[in-house]
Amino acid sequence: MPSTLPASEAHATLYDGRSAHPWRVALVWSDAALTLTRADGEVETIDIARLARARDGSGQRVVLRRTDAPDWRLLLDPGATLPPLRRAAAPTSRTASIVAASVAATLGIGALLWLQGSTILEAFAPLIPRRVAARVGDTIVAQLGAGEICHTPAGDAALARLAARVRSQHGPQPASVAVARVHLVNAFAAPGGRVILFTGLIDKARTPEEVAGVIAHEAAHVALRHPEQAMLRYLGLSAIAQALGGNIGALADLALLLANTRAKEAAADAGAVAAMRAGDIDPGALADFLGRIDHARAPGDRIDRTIDRLGDYAATHPGDASRIVAIRAAPRAAHPRAALNASDWVALRSICSARR
Image (cartoon, rainbow, N blue to C red; front, side):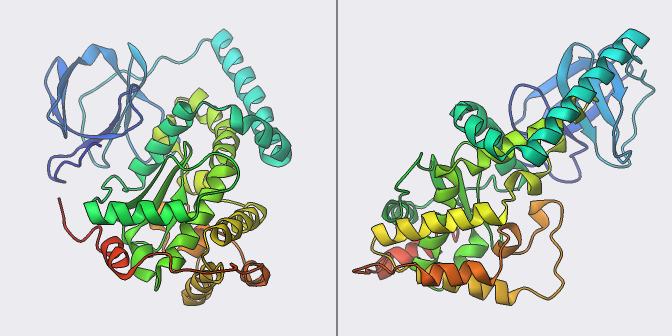
């Protein structure tokens, strides 16, 4: 995963058009070229004649494009200076007409997916190749700041045992379940099947059964292809931004990509209850966790537009008391057993304690 340069050196964010990850880069301008130094030490020099200033829809940042690499974008930090550059060529009237027609068509498709697309999304989501969805998922993980995945031998083993106890009974299984060093009480299933738990959620949980419930819930989203459905719905609209010179990595609305409707949350809850019962874990633990997190939220809390500013699990998993009631009303496990033994629980809770 790309690392981050010290703030004093980082002047821009690079989307190179080849990988899903954004790179922080240091910039050095000369009369004829721009030299970029990535966080991994790779240096790239670009002829200044190949650079053009592009339109930024927000008006807040300077965006540069390369005339010889259409998917390449460089987003300069606010306040950064640059030498005079030509602007990207304005489209001819013929090109403008084609672009306008494309945008109109994309808008119509996007509106159809957004407003009437549940059946379409459910039908097409399983057709997305895992490697394509995984690339979008990797971008989401990187932009969330969840790039530092924690590992210890004992913690990894405990997490694997916990995830195995709550395997979904239907549909694809998560490609991986991991813990990221992010101090928010949150978790999410990304396109491609990655399930990420944040350390804040692990710290907030009182029992391994509560963590098992969250994993089961996210695994149900994976089995039901909810992340891929959200990706299809979003990309139907984001194509408009791409047609106008945007970049999916730069413009992706993470909250939109990861948000689920109440209906999808109810379906994931039902899947989680079934998986917990099959794994001999009391589903009431998930209700306990949701109730405690929801109760802790301050009245009037507002869901921010970017998930890395969200403060709790309930904010990204909409619902109300009816979810908790439904989980508690479901049949309990016939012969419940502890989800983890005491030493495994300690290992999981300390998986991010040692910095690499």
